[in-house]
Image (cartoon, rainbow, N blue to C red; front, side, top):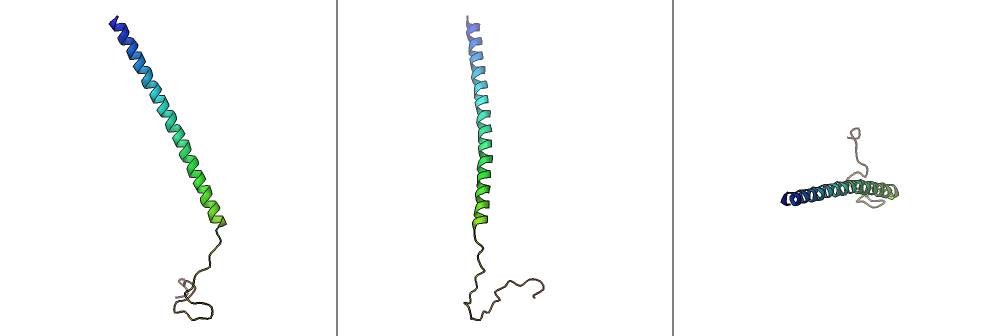
Length: 80
């Protein structure tokens, strides 16, 4: 009788472990899919913001008609 009860407990424990492992695998798969979806949504949002953002003109310390100590255009290799 004791051997039969131990065998049933072993089966019960084994079933519980298998079920927990299956649920963990399902949860990990859902988490991975959600992470990919969130990254995709973030990339779409960044792209939309970049497309929608107007280009800002370069700021100059000098106002119109004023002289500036620094040039308003960034020099490149050939301007130096």
